[in-house]
Image 1 (cartoon, rainbow, N blue to C red):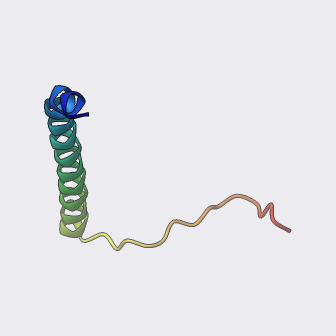
Image 2 (image 1 turned 180 degrees about the vertical axis):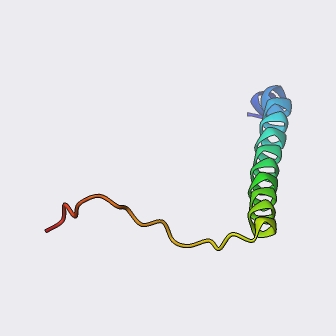
Length: 56
C-alpha cells in the first residue's frame, strides 16, 4: 500500500495543484467580469425569456 502511495503521490499533488489553480482562475475571471459590468453603469436585471409560455 505504501509503495502505491509513493508511486502516485506526485501525480496526486500535481492534480490537486491544477484543480486549485483552475478554481482560482475561474473565481478571478468571474470577479473581473462583475467589476467590468459594474463599471459600465448598466443596470443588471434578471434574464427573462421572451418566447411563448410552454407550461400552460
